Length: 178
Image (cartoon, rainbow, N blue to C red; front, side, top):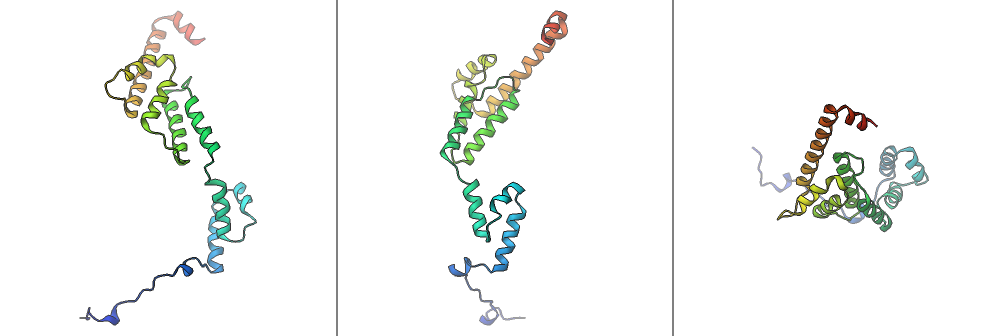
């Protein structure tokens, strides 16, 4: 049985120094550069093709794609405020609104759920006015999941109602078809 108290049996480790962590061998740098370049599309590869090191390539990519300009944030915020449900299905409209809110969050401007709920209710249109009124009349603010469920149920009921009308009345069916 080996003696576990033997100091010579314990491996010694050397912590990397800051200078050794920042130094890559040329072959390692070229390997990393190759990994980066192979993960890029042709149009993006064109942008970084003149760079000789992985670091310079990474910095170009970072400047190009990681910057969150104030203009981009303003554009997304404006899009969020102006996107109307229109002819979209409720699920498509909510997906679109969530995508814009997610892009704002990625740009560093989180949209709170209660703010998103208010924006959605403001942009639903007159067909959903009763739903909005009911949501606003609650004692506690409506949550996003509750609003989503309510809107999907309302849309389904409206579609069922229209379907039953068009099936029961040929004149209504002819009108609806036009």
